[in-house]
Length: 122
Image 1 (cartoon, one colour):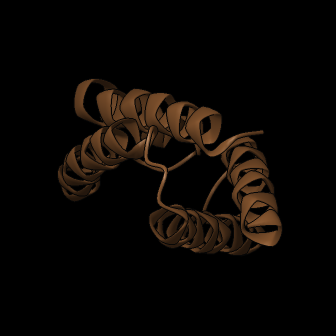
Image 2: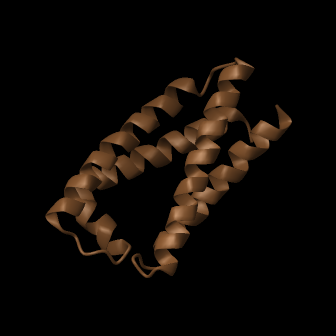
């Protein structure tokens, strides 16, 4: 898979997550079996804005040709998604999140593999 394709997929996923946290934070939390409190919804909306920024970043960099920039962005994406996946597994095993978080973990691991492969061939 090319950097352009992975960037576009990441951009779309981040856009959906950002919109989800902004418009349906309660549903997002309930999906993970987390009680939607005022504080959790506030943090969720703030995370939604961060996801929208990540979506814009990956959309804007999808066409870059600089190997150095591709390496930097791919390293960020691989590490950030690896940390998110690890945290998701940890929270699931600690019983603070329901099994639906494993769907997020699977997608994050797919991005780790995709961006990791780009790093290995560059």
